[in-house]
Each structure stands twice: as C-alpha cells, then as structure tokens.
Length: 407
Image 1 (cartoon, rainbow, N blue to C red):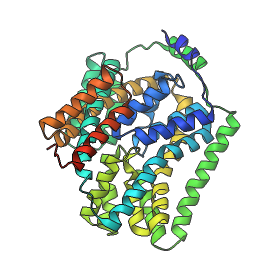
Image 2 (cartoon, rainbow, N blue to C red; image 1 turned 135 degrees about the horizontal axis):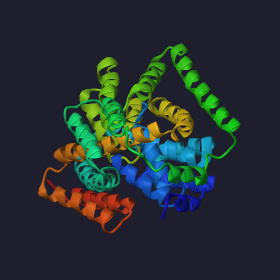
Image 3 (tube, rainbow, N blue to C red; image 1 turned 90 degrees about the vertical axis):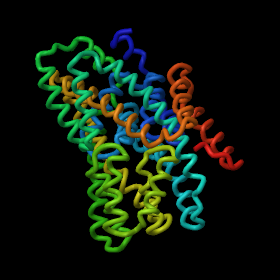
Image 4 (cartoon, helix red, strand yellow; image 1 turned 90 degrees about the horizontal axis):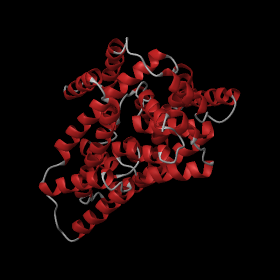
C-alpha cells in the first residue's frame, strides 16, 4: 500500500479513546519497550502513519527531555491537539506516579525491598528481548545501504565510548547531510502523504494559543520557584533544571539526577538513590519517575507532586513548540535527509542499548530464557507486551514467595 492510500485510512479517535489508550500504555510499558507499545497503538489503530511516527522519533531527539515521554507527547499532540496532549500525557505518567508514590511510602516506612531485585532482573531480561525486536525492525527499515550502515556503526561505537547521545545525534545530522547530499528522494509520494494525513485539530490561532499558554506556565514555574524560598522550591527547581537541560533517555539523564539528589543537596544517600532507580525500572511508564521518589523523601506527597511536575513539564512544553516548528520545515529536502541520518544513528544506538542492558541483565541461563521468550512472543507470535510483562511479574513473584531463586 502506498503512502497516499495508507494516509487516507487514518482515523481520529475521541478524546476518551485517546486518554484511555495512553493510560493503558502508562500502566504497562517498560523502558525502551514503550517505543513498541506506542507504535502498536498509534500506527496499529491508524491514528498516525508509520512515517509520522518515524518523523516524531527523529524530532524528539533534537531537544532535552526523556525521549519516550517526548514521543508520547508528540503522538498525542499530532492526534488530538493541545488539550488531547495535556490529558493524554497526564494519564500516561499517572500510573507510574501512583505506583512510585506507594513504593516510596513503603520504602521509607519499612525499608524492606528484597523482592525488588529478582523482579528487576526478570523485567530487564524481557525488556532486552523486546528491544532486540525493535532494533531489528529499525534495521530493516532504515539501514538500506552502506551510508546508513556507516552512520549506525559510528553511533554504536561512539555510545560504546560513552559519548553523550546529544553529540551522537548532532554528528549524525552533519554526516548524514554530507553523505546524502546528492541523493534523490521521492518527494511526490511525501507530498501526497502530507496532503492526506490527519492535521493537528483546530485552527492555527488555537495552536498559537496553546504555545503561548504552555510557555506562560513554563515561565511562571521558573519565577515561582525562584521567589518561593524554601526547600520545596529548591526541590522543584532542581528537578525542573534536570528536565529542562538533559538530553537522551533515562539512563543518560540519571547522572544529572544523581548530582542534584545525592551530591549537591544530600536528599538521598547513594544506597537510597540506587533503590529509587531500581523502583523506576520495575514501575511502568517513564524511567525518570524516580523524581517522585526523591520528592517524597524531601517533603512527602507535596514534594512528590512538585518533583514530578518539575521533571516532566519542560519536555511537554518543548514538544508542543517543536511539533509546530517541525510541521513547517519537514517538507524541505534538507530536513528529510537530516531525518534519514538521525534514524540511522538511532538504530545504532538501539543496538548499543541491547548490548549494554544485556551485559548487565542477562546474568544466568535462566534469565536468558526470559529474554528469548519475550523476543519470540512479540516478534513471531505478535503477543501484546502487556501479557508478556504480566506473565513475567506473576511467575517471578510466585518464585520469590516460595523461596526459589532465578540466579
């Protein structure tokens, strides 16, 4: 099916349908596996085309914030406009926030988290299997010649040497532009898709209002945090700063979070911070929900709310602005070539994630079974990721309660 025919089949869900779908993703999606969940939902239901999702994935790597949260916001905004994005991303984060709030209360009141370690191992192993599936899909779509393979390889090697993901993407933009400079692209089919694809709901005036409104809230948060002189304002500004300037995914942003919470302000001990990171891994939704854990330690429920909003609102604002700018410039051939380079680099970065997570998570033959099982289930049987994770959680909790170790 060509791009024009595919785009004509696109549909627009109701706000209730969109909200419910993002709530379910927030309740069931783990780590980079969120990418597969979003793709299955948004593209599978024809709310956006695969091309629009791929463009969004390239776009969200160009500005600060956790990539998967940015992509969820972009998807909701493209489908249902500003209010759809606001409600959908709120519900996307809500399950992980509530779960982390409960775990924080349990941890700081009782302190026994022995059950976290084996559960963490199983979930991480299954995530490795799912990321292998996602990586193979990306390689099939975006590594189609020697040039894209070269960019993917360079990105992989740079990540091995712990180069920040932002610089990897920037290099991909430069190298991709040089390598693809003389390449021709099928502009006619892309024009057809642009004409037929579902626009952001509302007139341009309303889209301008959404940028002004979200920008006003962004500035108001900074001013309020600066004028409100107490520990809560310091907590809010610290999380806001991390969310506003940090590029990449949760693991690349973690060192900045550690700097704020452990080294600069001594809100957590190193052990507490490590346990908070583990909670962030076993809870679904955005990995940086660890901000809720930090906020609860500083000032209970109010602290958890302020820390969570401070961490994620900058990304929400940036995505609204970038989505509007991107929709105006993506038609240019230069931008198309930049996107091609970014997606090739992201493919290499995904394979690095597989290697780095696999090295840490696949620690015994029994754990390999979980990773291989998840890969087979999602790739060859197209099993819903929700059931894969629920199966792993249920089995591992059962083994833990009966005293059986997977190690």
